[in-house]
Image (tube, rainbow, N blue to C red):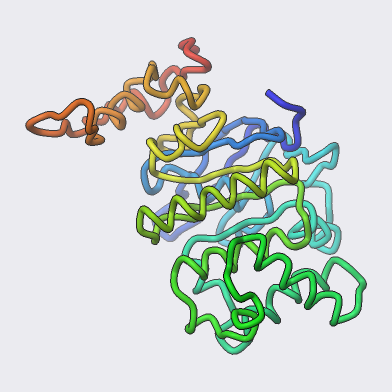
Length: 289
């Protein structure tokens, strides 16, 4: 693995509810370097909570605990809120799901992107505008001048996703957390967005946490894969070796996907074993208790 940017150890996320404590993430540990790391699993497996916890975006009744959350030598748990705001956006950025709902509906997209730049850089408004236009061009938006003046409801889903990427990347962060950035897009637009993301991450030497439920997509796009089940990491492996996964949960997920090269009369249905919840995990092909 490349040089570590983020190191997380013993992360737990709990929610206090009237019916008791819900454990969304249960003691996970992982590292991210200047690479593309995919975090995959079913809905409710803890993927999004993991990404939000790194940026301390889990609010009450949620409770986050960890033995260590270290980013580039900085203990994120030891920072106060003012110091954490210097990290968010400037050093670590996050692209949320459904980007059009994350944008302010009464501000033009250009102003919102420029604002993300001005928060972290003391420059004139004209310079921020120029930088915004450059960023819109970088995410392959045609006619940036026109798009700069549009409101969120005037752009398509694919363009909204690119605008959100531009907003998160304009401060030039070291780590990008992308939470299912292609889930609402068709296949063609999805591939275009991934190609843009791949180019930007590679050119800038960033780290990427790519949260998704699409195993095939992660296998083709990422360098390493982390598979989550019931709030735990049950398997980690190189993306190129995902088809040789050893954990029965990962194998079940793979078997439930249709494949053109291996047509079957009926897709298998994943049968969950209660033992997976706290059982052995697989690290790089080796089963560990």
